[in-house]
Length: 214
Ligand SMILES: C[S@@+](CC[C@H](N)C(=O)[O-])C[C@H]1O[C@@H](n2cnc3c(N)ncnc32)[C@H](O)[C@@H]1O
Image (cartoon, rainbow, N blue to C red; front, side, top):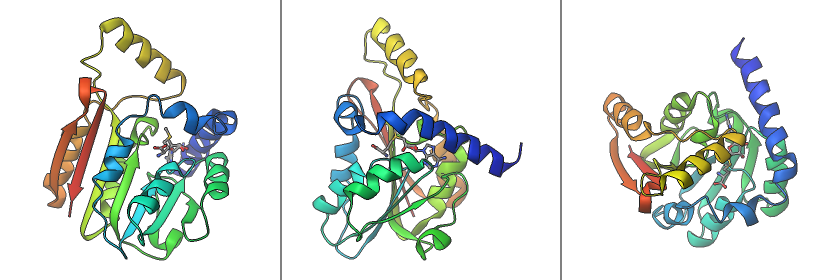
């Protein structure tokens, strides 16, 4: 199958997952997508900086980023046109939104700029089959001095085993696969591209936060 056909298939799958879910997404996900607010607090963005969220979903993070870090220029893209409907309804015209595939995006074509001061990947890598390509593309979109912030599910090691197994099975129904080797893959990328890496682990190993600085 060609890359374009794979993208179309994945876009159709994400639309199927989120067509109904997008209406209850923000309310329900606040109970299990932990670490997103910490990522936003740690963005450390100054006025005038550019922020890109890859896989921005309903625009929840971009709204909070714009509030927490005034006068940043927010951009977001998502492969699901359904999710983008929610993001467009929520965010004003000052936030630039576009359809795009994290594994093969051209930021210049989407937004007229190639580099961003902050790039955010929030619970997106766990839904992308070729997530290593998405991470590499996101890092390539960093402007000099820029920082990529990724948050996603961790190994859940601190949870009792039945709860851990139940959560993993439930996530699989939504096509979510925790990327347990994210720190290792990010460290390899950091070595190849001369980036600095920092890895943090959320309580009970529920989430992991990875930062790559150019
Ligand atoms: C769990 S949601 C996270 C949304 C948002 N980042 C948040 O933290 O609430 C995952 C998002 O990734 C998007 N997504 C999945 N695969 C993608 C891809 N290849 N390119 C761009 N977005 C993708 C989905 O459509 C969905 O909006």
